[in-house]
Image 1 (cartoon, rainbow, N blue to C red):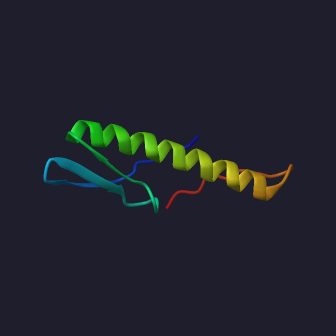
Image 2: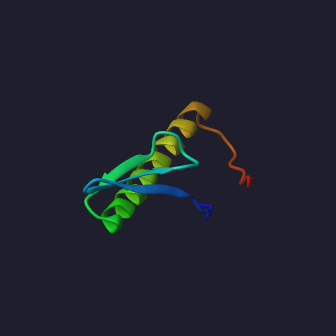
Length: 71
Protein backbone atom coordinates (compact mmCIF):
# COMPACT_ATOMS: atom_id res chain seq x y z
CA UNK A 1 0.00 0.00 0.00
CA UNK A 2 1.30 3.45 -0.90
CA UNK A 3 1.74 5.99 1.84
CA UNK A 4 0.26 9.29 0.75
CA UNK A 5 -1.21 12.16 2.65
CA UNK A 6 -4.76 13.42 2.69
CA UNK A 7 -6.09 16.80 3.71
CA UNK A 8 -8.91 17.25 6.19
CA UNK A 9 -10.95 20.45 6.08
CA UNK A 10 -12.51 20.91 9.52
CA UNK A 11 -14.50 23.47 11.45
CA UNK A 12 -16.46 23.79 14.63
CA UNK A 13 -20.22 24.11 14.18
CA UNK A 14 -21.84 24.88 17.52
CA UNK A 15 -20.92 22.09 19.91
CA UNK A 16 -19.81 19.75 17.08
CA UNK A 17 -16.73 19.52 14.91
CA UNK A 18 -17.36 18.63 11.26
CA UNK A 19 -14.89 17.75 8.54
CA UNK A 20 -14.28 16.49 5.04
CA UNK A 21 -11.39 14.78 3.25
CA UNK A 22 -10.56 16.96 0.24
CA UNK A 23 -9.19 14.22 -1.99
CA UNK A 24 -11.92 11.60 -1.54
CA UNK A 25 -15.50 12.47 -2.35
CA UNK A 26 -18.05 11.41 0.23
CA UNK A 27 -15.66 11.10 3.17
CA UNK A 28 -17.02 13.42 5.84
CA UNK A 29 -17.73 13.09 9.55
CA UNK A 30 -18.53 14.85 12.75
CA UNK A 31 -17.34 14.52 16.32
CA UNK A 32 -17.96 16.02 19.73
CA UNK A 33 -14.31 17.10 19.93
CA UNK A 34 -11.65 17.94 17.36
CA UNK A 35 -9.73 14.80 18.31
CA UNK A 36 -12.82 12.60 17.93
CA UNK A 37 -13.56 14.16 14.53
CA UNK A 38 -10.03 13.42 13.32
CA UNK A 39 -10.31 9.81 14.54
CA UNK A 40 -13.69 9.48 12.79
CA UNK A 41 -12.26 10.92 9.55
CA UNK A 42 -9.34 8.46 9.66
CA UNK A 43 -11.73 5.54 10.10
CA UNK A 44 -14.08 6.72 7.35
CA UNK A 45 -11.15 7.32 4.98
CA UNK A 46 -9.72 3.86 5.65
CA UNK A 47 -13.11 2.25 5.01
CA UNK A 48 -13.66 4.24 1.80
CA UNK A 49 -10.23 3.31 0.44
CA UNK A 50 -10.78 -0.37 1.22
CA UNK A 51 -14.21 -0.35 -0.45
CA UNK A 52 -12.80 1.44 -3.52
CA UNK A 53 -9.91 -1.03 -3.67
CA UNK A 54 -12.28 -3.99 -3.53
CA UNK A 55 -14.55 -2.47 -6.20
CA UNK A 56 -11.59 -1.81 -8.52
CA UNK A 57 -10.20 -5.32 -8.12
CA UNK A 58 -13.61 -6.90 -8.71
CA UNK A 59 -14.07 -4.79 -11.83
CA UNK A 60 -10.62 -5.79 -13.15
CA UNK A 61 -11.32 -9.51 -12.86
CA UNK A 62 -8.97 -12.28 -11.84
CA UNK A 63 -5.81 -11.15 -13.60
CA UNK A 64 -4.70 -7.57 -13.09
CA UNK A 65 -1.61 -5.50 -12.50
CA UNK A 66 -1.27 -2.80 -9.87
CA UNK A 67 0.79 0.28 -10.66
CA UNK A 68 1.59 3.02 -8.16
CA UNK A 69 0.68 6.45 -9.50
CA UNK A 70 1.66 9.66 -7.75
CA UNK A 71 -0.04 12.96 -8.60
